[in-house]
Image 1: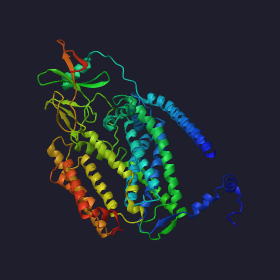
Image 2 (image 1 turned 45 degrees about the vertical axis):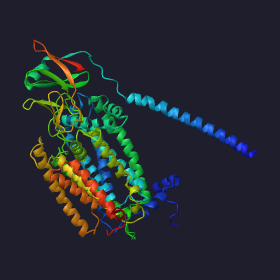
Image 3 (image 1 turned 120 degrees about the horizontal axis):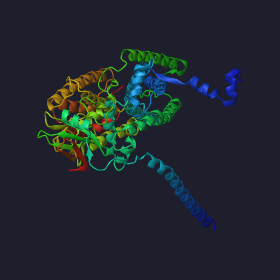
Image 4 (image 1 turned 180 degrees about the vertical axis):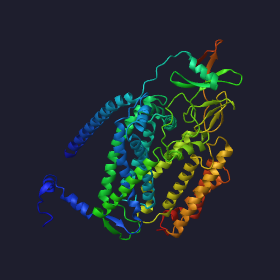
Amino acid sequence: MESSTDAAKHTRRSFLDLVLGIGATGWLASVLYPVIRYLTPLPSAGPSGPVKLSADQVKTLDKERFVIVPVQGKRILVFQDPAQNVRALDARCTHEGCTVQFVPGESVIWCACHNGRFDLDGRVLSGPPPRPLSQYLARQDAEGGVTVTPQTA
Amino acid sequence: MSATAPRSGLFGWLDERYGISPLIEFLRHKEVPIGAHPMVWYYLGGMTLFFFVVQIITGVLLLMYYQPGEATSYESIRYIATKVPFGWLIRAIHCWSAHLMIMSLVVHMFSTMLLKAYRPPRELTWLTGFGLFGIALGFGFSGYLLPWNELSYFATAVGTDSVKSVPVIGHWLLLVMRGGEDVSINTLYRFFAGHVVILPLICAGLISVHLLVIQRQGMAPPIHGETARGMPFFPNFALRDLLLWLVCLTTLAMLAVLLPYGPGLPGMEWELGSKANPLAPAYPGIKPEWYFLWIYQLLKEFPAHLLGMEGPEVCLLVVSLLMGVWAVIPWLDRTAQRGRHSPGFTDLGFAVIYFLTFLTLKAADLGVAETPTNDAETAVVATFCAYITLGVAVVATLTRVLVYHHRWFVLSAAALAHIALHGLLGWSYLTVGAVVAVVTAVVLVASGQLRTGAEAGVES
């Protein structure tokens, strides 16, 4: 008789523990979820179509042979290759995210942070970068204006 | 009888209400063990705390003028440094004190490790201390971005990019840290909140626990098992502490006045430079603070891919494993747990010092005039840094043998062999590291020295 009462109590207590546990977990989740969502930044808004370089950016491109422009929240390296074609690559090094640059004298893309080198197609030549740089479509019109399309080539 | 007699005045008033007599009695009988090893190691914790207090005071003063924002962060720091009366001094003290705090913290941590002060019952002291070390690095990393200059921008880009290697939640962590895909002014807002609110709160909690357990258990006595003499904490030790803090304050003031923008060493300079421009390419010579240099260099040593993973991922996995092992040393060192010497762990401490020294020196590009851009210049740096590290190791080893009678050198010898083969013979850092690790493991197991290293040896 006593043991069956104990068993009943045990079952009741276990059940209440379970309910309390679920309640506490639910309460914790309801507190944490809004905080996690609050901390997660919204995707950056920006024009989704092709981006035309400003006159200043084109001037820098002509002078330095490269310029870094923001396209849809990304840093894009626009440069003139030795054949005077305008090309575009992701400017974020695939190693640790530093901004790369075009070295006209050596015809390479170089990241100064960890000495990573890429060819003009974005392929890794040397150094620690694990992946190539993404290529983007760049076009120069007859008037000298440059347009970068935010889709990888 | 007289001890329990009611006291008058403010003390009596407080004692009647809050019962502070036992606390006074506790402090009266508190002692610091002396006699077995130099007392200098006992002052480092207090010194670190002193520099932290300086950080809080100067940090609050900087907050009176600092304005976080794309158009204001850099400008307000420049205003503080050039226009505000003594603003340059407050900033210089804040920067110098930050570096000196981490220096004394690192020496404190290594002295604790080498003297085995982490052994029971002080595991929690070690663990909270390790946590405080992590928080201090967090303070350094978050504070670095606040001037919003070029150097800090790229250092933050590299540092935050590392978190993407964390399995499953890496990308989410990156977004939360940066406030977006890239380092932007949103990153600065988050780092500012972390630097002035979140980290100080966590730090205050950890310091409280750290100090509480130290006060409760006292400072760790030497491992010899001898009955050490004791020095009364009040007033003898406390007055010495106070005097040291005075020396620290004077040194800090002199350094801030004579070198307000730092000594100009790699990873230890805080010239404001140019304002951050997310659309400018990174330039040669960008380096993080000196205490992150070893990770920065290790990232360079890893190839693009290794063991089916990307190089940076493997590198950060290795760093995390090393940090994890370091955190649980009190539980790994079972010989010290029994109050006996563990020469293997002492030697591990020295091996870690050599490992960190070489990588830090190499990251600083010692031996060449400018940042190396080709393999030949990199080899010159490696050779130069290997010679310096080996020189330091010779002095340290002679001291260990002649003064402390150490006889167990397997791990430090392996670390030095690694450095010598890489730096002097030009072998790949990772390849030779793996070969040395395997050979060391085989030698230890074959010769039964694994046990000898962990067990008691001739060591003081």
